[in-house]
Length: 457
Image (cartoon, rainbow, N blue to C red; front, side, top):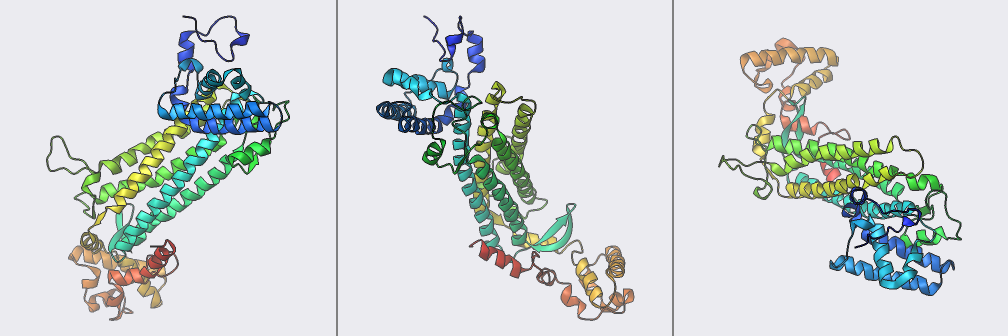
């Protein structure tokens, strides 16, 4: 049987080697762009008809044919072929089979170079809307967990050593802040993505009297690209998305790591819902935090996708090069990974069981009220450095004596500093230490409640 001739094959005397067809085909990857490709083609066809570049009746026939093609794809009857290389050529081939030679007029005044850039912008714009909604859902889940446990005390850590007491809600709201910054980055990425490249042609534009503003309006783009060479070779919007996603996974991975630590017997601060854990094939007692571990583990693939596309882009001369075909797998897999991990994280926090008594007991250990004693001494006239030295010596004595700061008799405390009065014990309780930190951004409950109110929970 004769080989199918490529739509671009007029220049070539022979047919493409089967190995090259298989090597260069991308339809198995980029077929997910079919809706965006068809939407862009419908807008392009309408513009061609409006401008008189093709007859209006032919434009309407193309639009109807494209909609029929979309129904085939969504109905599972579309005959995909790697011989047609990518989703764009597959759709054009099928369109021409269905409506005849008029289908071949669709490609007037455009190239696959500006076509694929358009499709990816349409796809990413839609994906970003979903990711932003999922991120807000995760922030609300965190805020909800904070509201349900707003009075729970826990040890705050530096260097993974107990440092100062904080409200558990305040700790959770730290991640809410991180995810707000992530949302800001994604919003900026969406703004950079929301530019219409169609009309740039292969690299130099087109000689036809196209109306780019009309196409942009049909597709909901607020502006069009201003340089055709840049437009067809630009993947900054994808890089920005991958970069924002890599930073998001810094936050997701840190959060997942804390869930893993907190759910261990050594901490015992939380219990993850059974539905989001797995057991061991050998050890019957195990309850493993696999979902959190996988979120932490998938961070590597997101970082890898960013590095992959940076490497692809770094040495490309202007304008388009086939290397850019390799942009889709990093983009698609990152979208899928971000979406799945945000959903899983949200569900984890919605089902989280907090062991407040275990957290509070841990907070009682480690002299976490030492800074409060130093602050008390500063209030009595000592410099902070002098107060720091005094409290350091008191802590050393307590370690040797096996007692807590608040358990020392007043006369022993006064032996280190005669300015200490009986009122010192009021500031040495953990709750007092938390509530005294009322400066904006501090862990005091008044600040936590203010933040939760702003979040609407």
